[in-house]
Length: 120
Image (cartoon, rainbow, N blue to C red; front, side, top):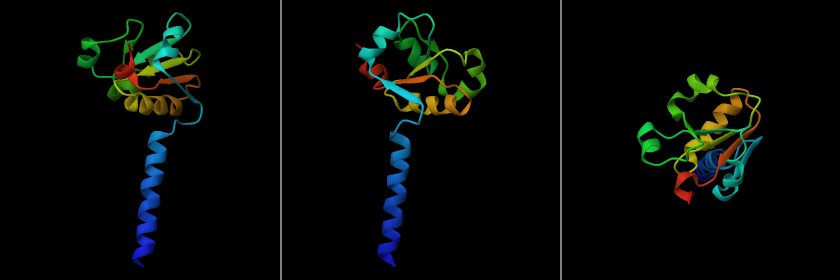
């Protein structure tokens, strides 16, 4: 009986980690190096989901600050017809934000891997 519980527990932890770390279907992931080429495109929208204080401290000028905790209410400011690039500090919040946008009907979403920590 103890072995079965362990197997179920390990399976649940593995599933949780898989769901948290693997990008959702339909969400593209790019590096900060790849992002630099995309910033020139005016037909794309760029959002930074960090807190306003984090954003004030350091941000990329093309990005608009929409904190993760207000994304669902402020997503109406974004066009579903244009690709949305999402960044945060490390890539975790932007990954969550990308999933939220996907559930809200956005189809062209790109998460910036490594976030501002990887930006040079």
